[in-house]
Length: 236
Image (cartoon, rainbow, N blue to C red; front, side, top):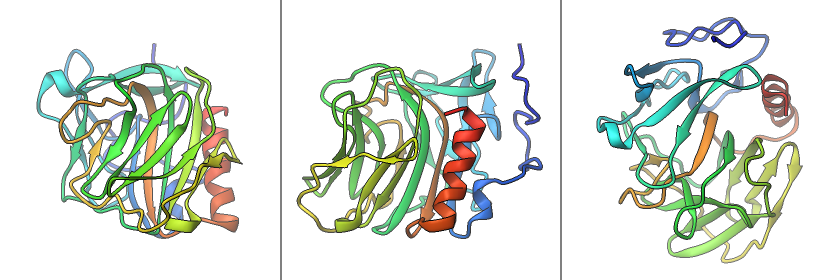
């Protein structure tokens, strides 16, 4: 059964929307589960095309490491399942997530890995997720910030702002940042891996509907626009 929404899987361009994340300047990367998906007959995803216009497509050529596309899962929209072991995607063009960036994601955590599950990793650090700390920022061998405990298998949208002393995590419109320490540069850098670390040993263990990155902090009206879009689209 196809989801009852106006979006077309695999479309080469973003369909008409009242508002989309690229309406905010500085969108570096934007992935959505109903757009730009290339998959095989088993719904294993080889390419998840970047909708920002920058061409930073997420890719995986090995079947055993591919995300799995699942139809009609969240408010009528598809999602991508990422296992808690060896699934992961790298990026065309080697995008960089520097200090002073905003990341947003719609996902639900369902499977523990050994220690912490990796949401995204890079040359400068990682964003992990676990049931008792939600998102955890880990950079240059030091733990920088965490969120409060989450509910396993609950859907959330998160806004994560990386910039040392101003780093924060917003979950479904509420600031849940805690345990901020070791403040300094919070850059993920380049050589990014979505859903795992470089060694394919800490899988995300989650389902994901949308992921994006902005340069700089989103605040005021722009933050409100993004959160209104995510909450309304996914019923959160």
